[in-house]
Image (cartoon, rainbow, N blue to C red):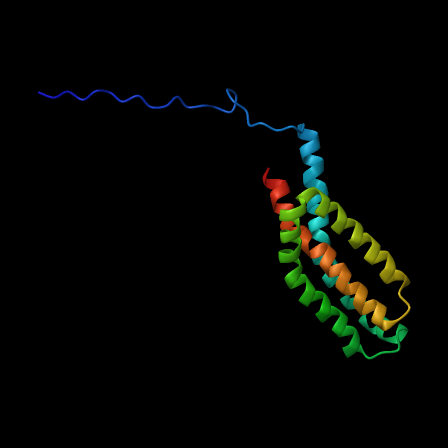
Length: 146
């Protein structure tokens, strides 16, 4: 007659026995999540906040509304490609420097858009704005998941 031997199951570890490691305190984690979420939100905000002022921009730059719509289209086109470019740059240079560079570039582009005095400058700065902030969404996920 064969008797079955009881198998030992591995001891279960609860969170109190071995907490996950983190160099950050819980307050620091919350601040990081808030900053990263806020920065990722800018990508969506920047693309849609622009629509109500299209008539005023057309009047200010003495161009048609269709030409101002080109700035929206160029923003969306660059925003489609930017996450891959920013992601590759982050793989090579590291996430932290790319995150800082992109946010600085975004803030600078926003300030320059306010001071833009020509239609060509507006289009170019919208491209820079999209390039800088669109990659933040892809860079936000690794920050939150850690």
